[in-house]
Image (cartoon, rainbow, N blue to C red; front, side, top):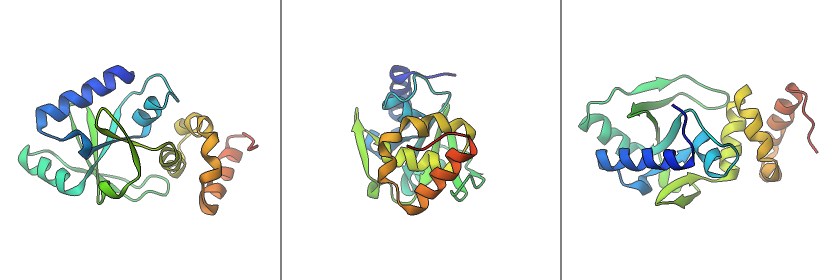
Length: 159
């Protein structure tokens, strides 16, 4: 299914209400965050991060199948489950992460979205990385080197 900004937040709201998840315990990441910032018009899936304690409670309470995503780019393997079409990713300290809020949901900041997309280094993330060019200056040395290599790989130039 493809989501736009309105349908994405409608789906998130519905799932949170149905499963008793407080909105501020959910952080929209990846394509959904790109959609929120108007970097893209639709996204094919919804990825969110939730704190490990809440993740573990949901897995136990609803007998959910937790699976291990393989390493991707610079990111280590991560536990996740899918609930009503939303991919929930387990993180250790959600509340320590910098974020914005919309309709009480946490939203990955634009800089963190850039770091996330850059860290994965996938072909499909290149357009989002380019759209976040205004934030390239906030990257550290390692991230800037990765950005330069990635952009060079795809024959793009950095201004």
